[in-house]
Length: 112
Image 1 (spheres, rainbow, N blue to C red):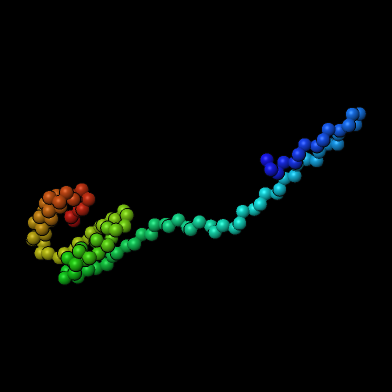
Image 2: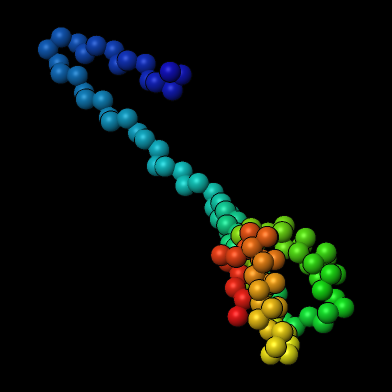
């Protein structure tokens, strides 16, 4: 209210008062340039693959898997191959299927 002008005195009789000029408005002050927000981080998939010699299998499981569990949506696929005598292949397959069943993996891991 301190910025309002006092009202104009009334015009003498018989005279028309002069119209008041329209109130002045200040043009909008542009906001100072703001830095754009930092980019939203995006997810990147990290894959680990390759052949692992038997002497490192346990260390791979104890050192690499915990690191991978720190991320989201960890997926692990396995592929094992072994050469055996034809006469013992069917018995080995049956044993492997039983092990996978005991682990609850019979629907997601197959034996060929």
